[in-house]
Amino acid sequence: MWKVILSLSLVIVLCSCTKNDGYKAPMFPIEKELKGTCLSSELMITYAYDMCVDDKFIYVLALADDKWVQVYDRQTGEHLGAFVGQGQGPGEVSVGESITLIPNAQRLSVYDQAQRRLVVYKVLDSENSPILSFEKDLNFIKWEGAVRNVWPLENSLLVNGQLGEQDGAPKRFQLLHENEIVSAYNEFPIETKEKQMVFLSPKVCFTPSMNKMATGILYGGILEIFDLSDNDISLEGIHKFYEPKVNLGSGSINPESGMKYGFSSMCATEDFIYTVLIGDEDPNKLNHLSVFDWSGKGVAKYHTTQLLFKLACVEGEEGKLYALTFEPAKGFSLYMYHVQ
View (cartoon, rainbow, N blue to C red):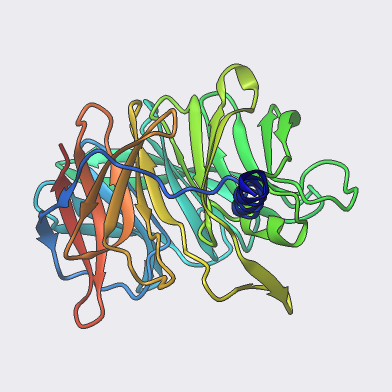
């Protein structure tokens, strides 16, 4: 009788593990409230796509008065100017997707998804007020398939898109060096082809050296960590937190009942990955700041009063974070947080 019970128990445990498929919510040894300092609550933007920070300025990719890049003083939050006109001419951007500071080069790039080109600007500091001077653009029209995003690395370009031979299989990341694909990573951490679509537009962040990359999905919660050194893309780790329970309808991703949302924003230093990890069936629960190390281990989780819409950080100032926050009644604000 006891053997039968033990056998049934073992079957139940095995079935349970198989159904879970290795998903486990992250654990954090530190969990507490986090208060921030408001730098500015007068941001005249309706939607923000991305943000980044250097030693003086905060750059927000948001269209306002036909200008795509809004620049703020990092200490005071003062709006210092708007740059990059909307359009299709030289130096203009039609539909901005991401904004990237090119390390140690005083350059800023914006990827224009509509025109499939990376537009590069020289950042000039004129009496503590920046000037963005158009330098060049890199066009991806000649590549077949969709080019969803492009980020400049030290000696190459990282592309999220369908480059190379179109064999019907979805492609994820390719490294371009001197206009040639030198490395590619097109694997998925799940086997279901329909659900692989959630990995084609992940949240992405890099170390300041641009030698490592972390990606996280919004529909479900899976964190992937990659090494980008030596003109190569290699996977270092996969961390499954929440299962992507979705179905596709009319080309859109539809979450199923009970699915927990994952990553909505990320930024990184050489030591830590700072994320907005929702971890709830409500996608509007954006007040959780979750910190991981580069092995994927949870370091700390903080709860904020504000909804964290975008994150940015600066190397050399560990624990200092900048956030674009959102409140339905007030709109967007800029906040600074000290994380210990």
